Amino acid sequence: MKRSSDRFLTTHTGSLPRPEDLIRMMFAKEEGVPIEPRALAMRIRDAVADIVTRQSTAGIDIVNDGEMSKPSYATYVKDRLNGFGGESQPPPYPDLVPFPGLHQKVYGDRGRARRRMPGCNAPISVRDREAVKVDIENLKAGGAGPEDLFMSAASPGVVSLFFHNDYYKTHEEYLYAIADAMQYEYEAIADAGLVLQLDCPDLGMGRHVQYAELSLEEFRRKARVHVEALNHAVRNIPPDQMRMHLCWGNYEAPHQMDVPLRDIIDVVFLARPSAISFEAANPRHAHEWAVFETVKLPDGKILIPGVLESKSNFIEHPELIAQRVGRYASLVGRENVMLGTDCGYGTWVGQAAVDPDVVWGKLAAMAEGARLASQQFWSRMAV
Image (cartoon, rainbow, N blue to C red; front, side, top):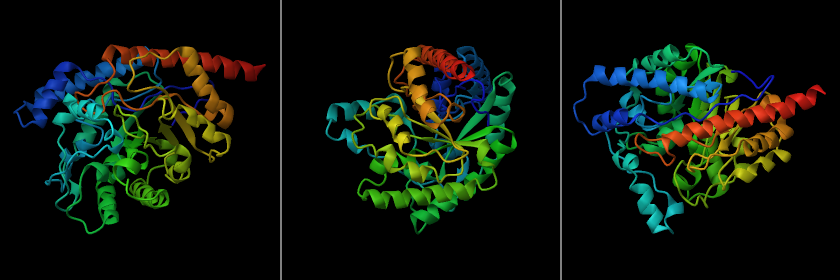
């Protein structure tokens, strides 16, 4: 994985705006409407080529496929693994309960309303070994030129958050069954020379969605088990070829129940991936740069703080972006920081709080903010 050695590098969380015709095709597939497989495959391949070009044009250094092939960053595994023939209900968002109008709006989102949520009702195993290979081929075909390429994959913990377990005797047994099955995908991505990103909102959002009834210390123990299962699944992959994304849920809500970063960061540091992408721009977490005034960044770790909000149509000013990354760089070292986004811009097919055209304006602003901050940090150090 590249580091910010002579300037601040830029990246993002994973999902990006999908073309409207691809959204319609994926809606149809999710709803069981016959779709010609070759036509869908070709449309996805073309969409990936376009999204890679647009990232580079916007000035993003470490790019991906925009998750064009996936109905969501987590639920896509239902199409790649056996064992998910049951049913699940969408996870509750208790922070929305006091706000019924907003609750209705969030749950009425066209992407959220169409998502399929199966449950685990049989042994988990790999069913489709080709899907990740196709994703890799599509990304590499469109990926000439960027500093680096990354590909995201659902962590065992986030799969357990969305898909209810009706088969395994314990939650830990369930987690490790998912980990063993997902190991194939993780290693395929790494073996292809890509940076593997593990999506881990279970370590943040899981506090108020999956384990709201537990005490903080009880949740921390659960989170450690999630990290141990993740580490088991990626035990054969070098840490510096991996990054992880920590978030508290990419949905419009007060987020007044979000667990503070300070209360979980030591558990997050136990995970093997070297780099940690996390929310750091939105009003609930923008203040948490101060955590690193007292928390030492472990050797070998990299921070990728979000400098762009993922639910706001404001385009952040480049000077604000430079200030945001500068706070982290001043505390942990410029070479240990990259610029990222709070979360994705197409988390579920059809879900887009931010206008697609605005997304590209935000990413271009991030590139400009990185340039300004690089001038400050590298020019100053050269004097």
